[in-house]
Amino acid sequence: SQELEQSPQSLIVQEGKNLTINCTSSKTLYGLYWYKQKYGEGLIFLMMLQKGGEEKSHEKITAKLDEKKQQSSLHITASQPSHAGIYLCGAATSSNDYKLSFGAGTTVTVRA
Amino acid sequence: NAGVTQTPKFQVLKTGQSMTLQCAQDMNHEYMSWYRQDPGMGLRLIHYSVGAGITDQGEVPNGYNVSRSTTEDFPLRLLSAAPSQTSVYFCASSYPYRGGSGELFFGEGSRLTVL
Image (cartoon, rainbow over all chains, first blue to last red; front, side):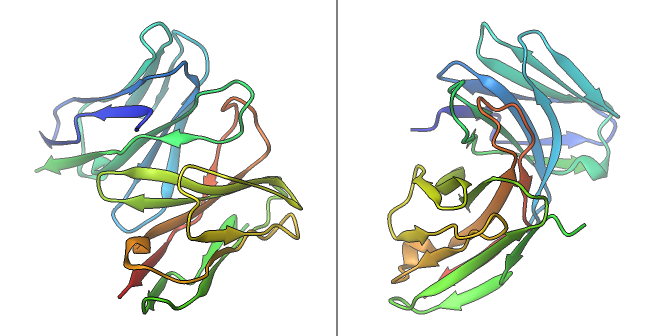
């Protein structure tokens, strides 16, 4: 069963509008990663969150980690066509483990 | 700096054929892993390695073999390909962080079709 659930599975947003993607874990989170993937390409690292309450921003993308809810959110402000793609969250669910599990991804379409 | 290099990028196989997906990294990373990506399933871990001579199974290891004779290389072998192995395969590497404490670097992927 999927340990990381992403919602929504897909979304369409008008250019200039904001959007939010959620990633919820059924287990305790140890390190939460956000990656972006363009269709047919590899994964681009966006940011990593480690501590509860941590929030990081890069350009118009902000990610937060809510340790109590075992959840992370990715928020894009004033979306642009360049934000289109698949966003995946990944996490370790053991403090002693090397491997990462990933969610199924959220497909973002930005309409002009 | 090449990072993580996967070959081939595309491959078509017939059922029962064997092949090896190559993965090489030039960052001196001890941790390497293979994922497969299928629609609606996200990335699923096949096998991983925390150093030369050490490998372990991930979530979906059946039908795949790996070996790690050097730090740089981590090939994935399909001994007898099946249509269910049609997928996009990603190799990833990092320092051996425990508990998700460091970035995982991905290759560009290898698209495999099994007829």
